[in-house]
Image (cartoon, rainbow, N blue to C red):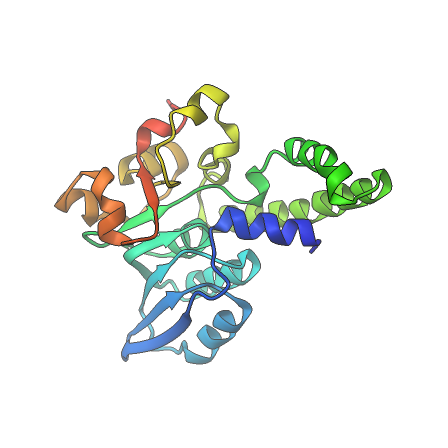
Length: 250
């Protein structure tokens, strides 16, 4: 992956390189994950999971999309339940949560969708690169090569995401609609302070995107999304948005 895409991916996924990562076994049937999704955490998951595992409990701001897709496919292979404890953001929501047989969001917890690399407005990013070229030291040929690399990488993710959505049985539009690149300038101006993420209701996920098996205990316990971010991810500066920010579906 190019240096630009690495930086863009980190910004999109809202990750700190120093975020802790770790799997542990709560009991014979339950694995618990907290931290950033990486290739190492994918390998650790493969080492820990066994025939007795039934449930995965996650607390994560996301991380490496390829590693997350690998974990998600393993979750689906074994028909495991996924429980969100605190927060499950970015690739955690996009892949791990959606892969679960039962998908449970605990009280004082939230999902955080905010699109994937495939929801990125590539033309806008290339325009930004071009504008920054005089000070960034990139030549026209280098920008063209970088843009080609970006397109190739994004197409690779699009292929994997399409196959994943077909396997799980949800509409891949979910991963586009939950991205903020689609917002107009006026809508962007209305975004609250902080790092915005979307927490669709179970009803909307089922009706608009075919996502089944969601148990939203967070809204059942307290429907106030404005305070949910501080309860589920204290100190992280997250702003949790609801169904009003998603396109209307029939």
